Length: 244
Ligand code: BTN
Figure: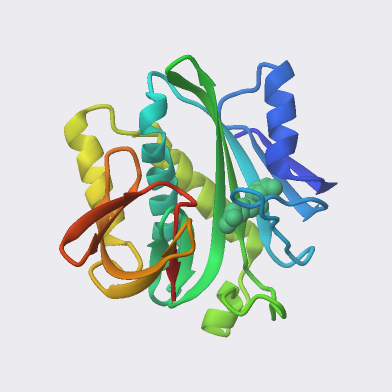
């Protein structure tokens, strides 16, 4: 396993992205940092984490023949790996909030940022970034965030959790489904883990309009399918927010 440990970097995703552009990195290269100076989240958000308390790492993964239109399949596979590890660690009520926040109860304990580099209609390689809140004791300005320690009352060995995560993510990526049937099994498994699925909830669309609906599932392109008053509404990332 090729694991690079850094005491500090701007962002492990940015670090790997830069190296992947100029070098022939071994597939599965992982970079882990104790401190990120400019940790990045989904879209334009940032990812802030107390140094020495949590996990921040990224994995370089070369895919073969994954259509760009199906890139969310990779994301589902990674979310499910994280969820498996957290459930094995007996973290309570683990679920996945679309597209790829990992929750314990209603608190976000892990964020995933996957950046796919495309070549024509295919994904050439992916930078899979994971930020897991492990032993941090409070998140002052983030009422919806928590760490594993806050959810269980127990401090965890970060190195052990890191190795479990890497192994499980690689295991899922190595058996990444090639056939349509296996892909729909993956989607079903992901859907079964979805936070608020089938529960009438409040949403806000990109125009700021609020509406009620319940999550039905995920389209083959990774869009969120919401049933609102009998109508099927389909949303891409950032087009809708679940209010909870
Ligand atoms: C999110 O929830 O918005 C995604 C957060 C992803 C954070 C991780 S920490 C390791 C990797 N490097 C980054 O800059 N971001 C990801």
